Length: 74
Ligand SMILES: [Zn+2]
Image (cartoon, rainbow, N blue to C red):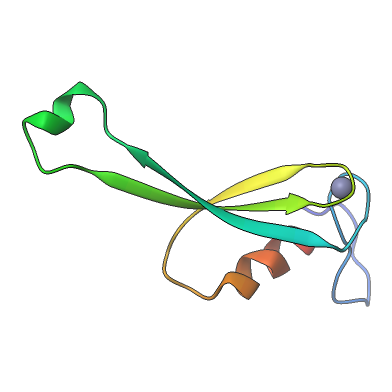
């Protein structure tokens, strides 16, 4: 997704180039059908740029949080 290649490890926010981020977790549960089956919970990690607020959602794969920050920052 990053459009530019550079020697630097981090390009920063895809929108504004800022490199400070906040990482949070959100959970979504299934709708009406969840009553009939096991409650299904999907967890996502959200990386947000502290400067412009741009956020990307990543399904929680159990990997370390720093990995997704690296993905976000490029
Ligand atoms: Zn930004």
